[in-house]
Image 1 (cartoon, rainbow, N blue to C red):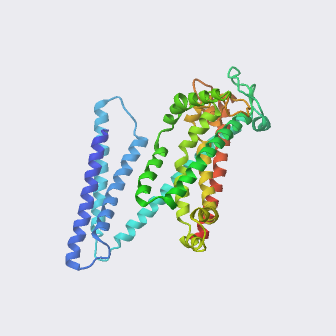
Image 2: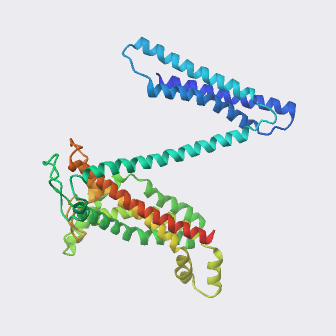
Image 3: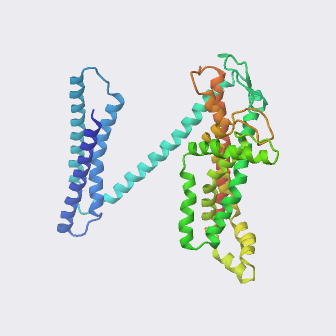
Length: 406
């Protein structure tokens, strides 16, 4: 079925139905006087009654329609389905048009439909989350039939040995990957927190409105840059620069290392901390600031002793959200961390993370019934649990802050 033709028919049906409902209610208003609902609601309701049956028929055809090699028969079937969709839409239009009257509560019905639509979208989001969790959990349980959970969560050696397909042999210790993830995320936060927080303080307390309107969008552009660009930047620019800087001071810093990935990731999450902290600081009651200044405190003392302590719960929530973003990052660490799954305390050496290992275990021609592939689901479930805990903690802190000041 020609998608352009279907789209054109649906748009024509939608526009004609809306115009029919709007014009009929407008004429009725001239005769009867004031209507319960504005013509825009009558037009929207007629359009909904016309478009929903048509979409339902087309959706059923897309789900259950069978393809055929006979081009002529396929064309005929598509035409019949399209005509049926248009016909049912016309019937819905006719029925909805006849319901229009001076006291008809079109606005209430449109708002009810919108509410049901929003509920449906929420249900889809919830079911998607549940589907992801259940799929990860099912495959992770299959993995734990090959490898003991104790060996997985407390093992210190990562060596899955792909040659042992279909067996449980190999070392699947999580700790080297978890340590690399935590190390890189920590470096990222050490980079992003002072820069992001001081940027937020400057924008809220010192910058003029014109300056703020220029600087804040420029900072938030960092959040829109694709992470693959950050990874390439880390690989070809930041890594060699750090290696050269370390050589000047007699330090052995690899071009691909936890330090390289952490610094670039810290730059990436600066907008998360600065924007959220900016919003939080602006919500602090101005009476606190004015009272501090009225008692003789300087502006810097007011910021350090009044504003930041008052905004601290919200700032902590922003930091936790940024940490969860850093933990789940993939492309930067794939290119810049070195992919070396060993327990190392030196941030200047290569490491590996949970996300990089998931990519490695599911890349290429792999047997998805082997522990070497199933371990990716156990790693994904672990990562999901980590980010879920951080997000819940952040939301709890932010909610508590809002209850205090709103």
